[in-house]
Length: 482
Ligand code: ADP
Image 1 (cartoon, rainbow, N blue to C red):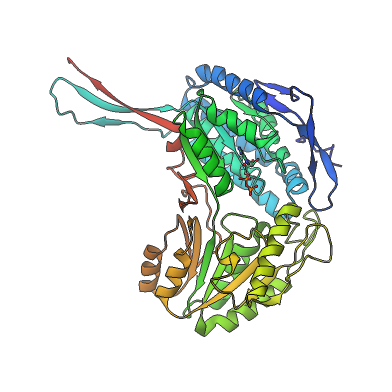
Image 2 (cartoon, rainbow, N blue to C red; image 1 turned 45 degrees about the vertical axis):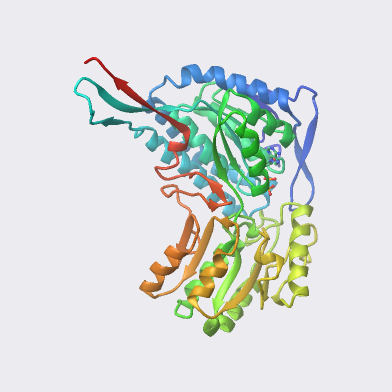
């Protein structure tokens, strides 16, 4: 069944050629739902990455000269192809990543939406003319593509995280070298096939799979690369930032989160619990915007915990390919090990498990949807991202206390709060130090809106009209002697 998927490519794409690693070495890709090997992909390193960068650099010379309308046309084809193949792409995604097929279809749909958004934005890259302070001179700002960009993406959204990087690269006339995560290379490689089918020239998008450190070292060290765009952990982001400093590259970083979800006494409880379920359990809790900490006001605390517990107990866990499953496996043993550690630490410090708390009886890397009441600030889960289906619920009394607790982290990606009080909405919105704020909403990502974190959650934005700026250089030009 897997080999029948027309998007399963098992080679690097460099300069329009599908090639193996120089050494011929490969590594296995595992289906997290059953532990079986799906196939294997090239174990590449610095040398293959360098060639991909050189190919991207060569392709940039002509690609940057194409018109925005031309590139937008190709991107519309790419968008249509993604939607025409949504089912195959979604199956490939679930196979390697584990998320329920409905969520995979949604992610592939988001990928198409990002490509369309950037196809539209391609035609709106405006410069400026500036009223001159000299009678004989004219002043302007022109925009140009930065050049070769290098993109590194994680396993939790292996398709759409690339759409956010390939989209603005294509739109502006940049070329790219892409490294998907080891756990989920197929959804990344599928982009190569899609770009080929859409008629995007050889060398514009290059994809390399393999060992992260040498590939990342080449991407950050090579002076031909002018921008690094990364989505992943804060730890890896800091390494890449340091490495990119030597050649002063532009950087965009979408890093970790520690999302708080605050429920005030005056909230609509039904709405809050629905939002909590979506903000916690999507992708089995493995997203950087998933709620990590629930803060619930004392007057509504017991009712909220009860409802969240009841709804969590009803979630169907299993292989994402099976109908009715809403929570798939955890990506691998390492991640489930971290979840177990954080849960056991919380329980050891007085956390009260009201549902779940263990590996699921299905075995493998399945974990039970879990709610931990009586959570406290000394627990590791208050500070560390659990990246799993575990919901610790903290109790608070005052608004000030909730905002202070929510902000007591080095992260600043997504946060959520529920209230029906207008004044409080403004106070809390302005008080929370986060790049993404959901008010009475648990899922807020949209192609039209800028996605990006504050503090140690990142640098730069993806999506919205802001997203394209990160791929452009601006040049001030002064013409004299007129
Ligand atoms: P997580 O696996 O927790 O999402 P990582 O930051 O480890 O976070 O992984 C995100 C991406 O970064 C993956 O594609 C991974 O291969 C890559 N990566 C990890 N370490 C490095 C590194 N030293 N240099 C370049 N890329 C790296």
